[in-house]
Amino acid sequence: MTLDPNTKSALRERLNFYRELGVGPLYRREVSERADALLSDDSDVVATIEFFESSDRSSGDRAALLQVIADDIGPACQRCKLAKLGRKQIVFGTGDPHAELMFIGEGPGADEDQQGLPFVGRAGQLLNNMIAAMGLKREQVYIANIVKCRPPGNRTPERDECETCSPFLMRQIGVIRPKVIVALGATAAKNLLSVNDSMASLRGRFYDYSPPGIVDEPDGPFQCKLAVTYHPAFLLRDPRQKKEAWKDLQMVMRYLDLPTPQRAPGDEGS
Ligand code: URA
Image 1: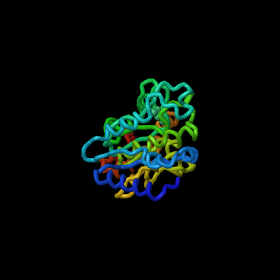
Image 2: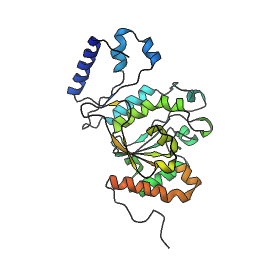
Image 3: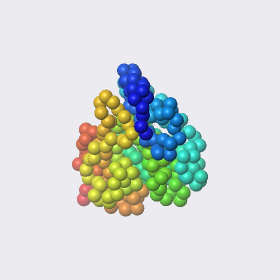
Image 4: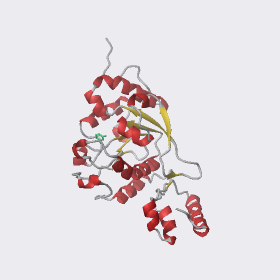
């Protein structure tokens, strides 16, 4: 989209105004070519700053900002085909809006679709145990998924579904501003990092992560660490990999200054 100089300066003034008020981070949605073609001249500004989050980070209004995002999605979102493929409800995400640690899974399963909350089924029980092993309570972290609607038969969410849902997840990250994101499984890792590598090569290190589209002037883009570990559903199928997952979580614990026990939980030694 090309903006004429007057529009550009009006937009700049408006952004400066928000900044002076302490408003931020701002979220800029990528405007598709099709949408671009539909825009008339004077709707440019509206389109460009269509989404912004007003986040006074000291005032604890993040819960309200998350609610704004949930309201934007709406309870009956029809933006992708998952809406018509049997999902009961949107699973937005849950936890502490000020969490330092955020877990991102793939998409809701049957239990999550039923209850409207992420990770409440068997995989969720294991995730709860993983969180407890880190010395944290579930309520102290934030949990979300790449897609907010259940894919039929728990299939992997398709690319267009992930892409449609992504701006809302990015906005959630922009509001929560976690220190660390843990991507649970290959779908979460590949979508967040825009890579197509194997889990084995993705695990075991931190990535510097900036959610695309989150504009956080004047401090530069918001950045946090991202770690990749196995999805709890995979660990249920192959419990031998729990030791590896525990290594990933210990790496995160060290970064967050959480005390790290020597032994893996449940490992009493011989
Ligand atoms: N698996 C996921 O990836 N997310 C959930 O919320 C539940 C199971």
